[in-house]
Image (cartoon, rainbow, N blue to C red; front, top):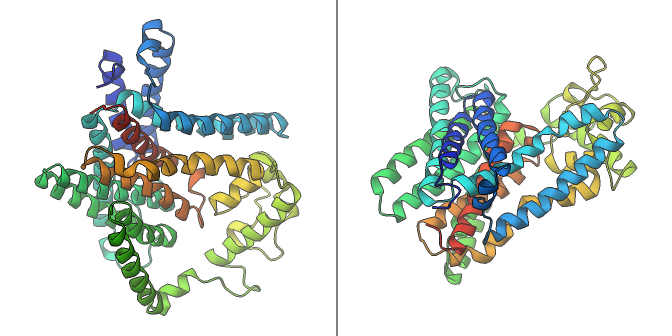
Length: 417
């Protein structure tokens, strides 16, 4: 156990992190309360000489690499606040950067294996309970395309992102418990994970469901040590994927197709029109982007003729929805510079994991690390058709996964159990 964990402040911060983790699936207010209280303890610790001494990041190579990119991202956001036509509003929009402290909180207050597993388990359990409630409420519409969510008031797409990440972490936690010899616990976590998957289905989010299905083989592949086993597995997945793709029912395939160019109504058509407008905006400000407020002010010049639904500018609120693609959205708002910075802090922990995944000394750590690393790819794939990074709930869930991966890698490197 780290020195920062073994203090009254550290124990309180851990309790608040637990509140944050379990509250994510129920209410952003609960999650923010837990996270905010942990932040206040962290801030108070920084103002104390003894407190600063116990906030030790020695050996935390992955954490330092991550925050090198994160700090550059913060500076780039500050630049956009300075040049924004509405700097105060731009500053308000930049408030979510503080959520990037979540990996640090996990490192300082939940890096011992027992505490880390508790935080992840509470995240999965909260999503499972919320999903079970939602399934009961939607039992009559379970198999049709009526959208739902768990026991919360959040948008169904936000719950889709959260439940997909929670399900992935649940799978990792299940196998971790199994390899640790706790088969009863593994079975219980598996049941919770299945409940979370039901919650994912309830949202009827095509992007999240398809992305989750795609990354399951990646989760398995990352844990195969033998090269021959990996090649055989890739061949099996390739054949199975080809067969599935060739036999997808027309009713499902239709959900993913873009309509004819003259059709502008419908989610796929509206998404296409947003991307066309975004492409034109990128060409105008390729390197620096428009900033959040600049994007909302300048969008009418680029709106596709005949656009409908979410692709239409709101003249009353003077705003437009985000690009329904995390990467196009980042490029439009913060330019290619911002996109490259985002890709760095997005995937740097995963790149370090690929280098070190077979060096993890505890066999029970490997499935959870693989799940956390796979969640990075899962978030990216979900972000291809939705702006999950504009949702604070999904962001917080993602940073919890990133924090778990960083802590597993760095704590193993320094021999912390």
